[in-house]
Image (cartoon, rainbow, N blue to C red; front, side):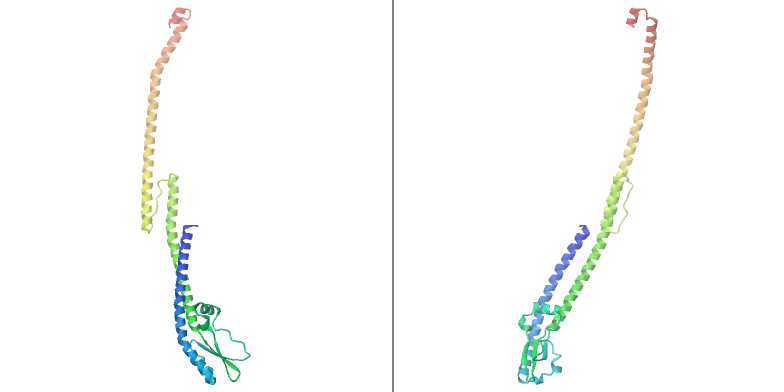
Length: 263
């Protein structure tokens, strides 16, 4: 995995942990708030239960439809119970935050054959909790996306500097000591480019010095070769001339064994 991938993975895991911690704290506080609201609504449910037991006709629908945290419903005796209010997510949140006893509905039979059901309704509060959870998730997702984008831009800028440095090192390794890195806006990149350019300048100077030394050695070698050639021509030539003269003398005295032997 690349360095950018590891950084993105680490930041994403950190955001997930922070988001989960925030969700846990939010749900915990929301549970306290919902239970406090429902405790206040329990008195209303008890009062409505007393009214339903003594005078159920007085509980008209237009008076009970707008009660907060209290749900009042009428149904026929053969009518199946109504589905709980709220969506699946809201019902799940309610089961996580509240005891099952708080969600139980109380039923009272009426004289006209209908049934009156009164129950606590926490779904207004839970809907607000759901909105808060979604807002927290959206905010975390937006912050994560913005952070990853910022990291990508910053790391790409740094990787561009490293790519240029690697290319420069390849050029220097190939013997092109005139290679130089251009400046960047980053202070670290400026220092890196300065050190690289100083190194390349030193290597270029050493290369020039080596070339001068090599040229001097070649000139000295040529001079020594010429001196040796001259010495060989002057000294060895004389020896060869003497040997030639002695050889000619041997041909002349070839019939004189004693003189040949002396020669």
